[in-house]
Image (cartoon, rainbow, N blue to C red; front, top):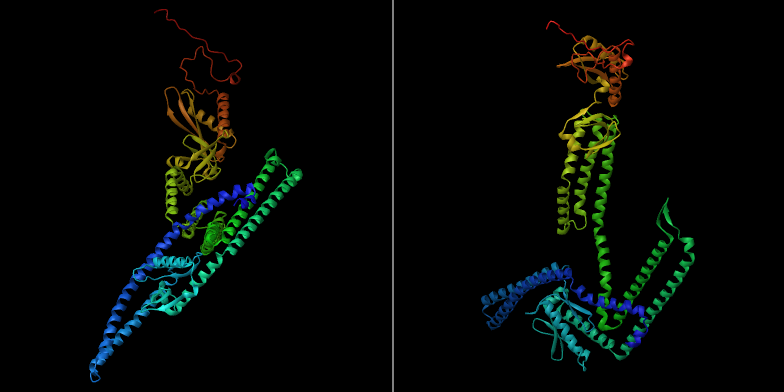
Length: 631
């Protein structure tokens, strides 16, 4: 061992020993895999049920054999003249023979039904090579017990220093054919064993006998001193080749690093976008070196993973270890490849469902697009409903597609997959109640059609133009260029005023109120207000503005001016200009707007009309005091 280890560099030992220990320790785990245990238990249950039925049939066979022997004795003892009794006995014998044929046919039919699914228990040679499989019980021994006992007897034969392999022979017994060595029975072949292989008992016994002989001869050859020395030499050669490969890889790795270092300025540049650098040349160099290092260790692992099973396969006692180590990694890959291959029909079904639904959704989208553009008209269906309705239909179609695809997804029938799906559904339903409420409100608002993009509306105390409508929110731009986001559920539960929906056709009535004293005739006030409205741009001449007197208060009369406009989105400008014109015309005509209030006595107080509108000779009235001298 010291000589062998001297051939392996220290780096190799650092890798080989932990991996070898890990793989050997995992061998037992791999053999006790839960899936294999489950399959073995199912197979054992199937064979046990079959063997119980065979035992019943075998009991009936023994009874029939005893009865047949008794009938044959009676038949021989009869005299020649006793024909009637002889016919009766012959009839009973024929019935037993018919039962025997039916019994064999029944056993064969049961075996044929199990042959494709049931797995036998292997009887192994000295080198752990499988010689044949045992399916049926014999007497009280179960199939697995028979296989173990046969393997132990073959191993015991091999331990005999004076073994003569050619002395193994077959001997026919009453109901079995035995393979014997001297006075020892190695195994017995029953009628059921022969039926499993569709052969006679003698033919099957000869075949098993030759298999045992061949195994023993091979084991003797494999364990000879010369062969052992050859295997040790071969193992040393394999280790030497492995060491050379690792040395070459290490040397090539060093050369590759020097080559990259000499050319990194040519190959590696800063990875940047505008002023931001994602990766500098130095960072790229570190990544490249890290990837090369990972690749080198991966190659080392592959070499050692191949080398260790090869060394194990050289020696007979460790060949099972080689198979276990190889299958430890190959089995998952094989299982993955098999799973992918078996999943291909489901994958094809998923692709068919996806592409069919994809093009069907495109067709539906084309129909709704035609409706939106006005090319296709449906009675009672507005064009602005087209895209929202298409979104709903598309969502439902995708949901239906997912329902169709779900059974074809890998693991969809597992309880874990179903549990995770239910858990996610509960989280979604609990965490998105307000979002779903807004989505439902958005759908209702779409079909209520209270406003559209570009309309000037008022929601609660917010007034603005609609700039965006989604399933969740509606966004307004106010006259101050503020973007206000309002949840759709709030819109649905409140009142919405739309200034634009009817303005283009019938006009929007804007209104403002002024308070004028009782000393001004109402006809003059009406005329002044109407003239101010007609002087304002964007106010329609027809229909003509009109005035309503809304109240008669303690100090003044409230006059409400109403005028028609079409540009609902320009109300702020229209109101501002209208108020300016009202002030100008009222001041020009000497009408005071009584805000704040004034008392009736005006002596000593200047009028509230701006000085530019007053006559040049205007004087503030003085206080008048009248004294009654008589009092």
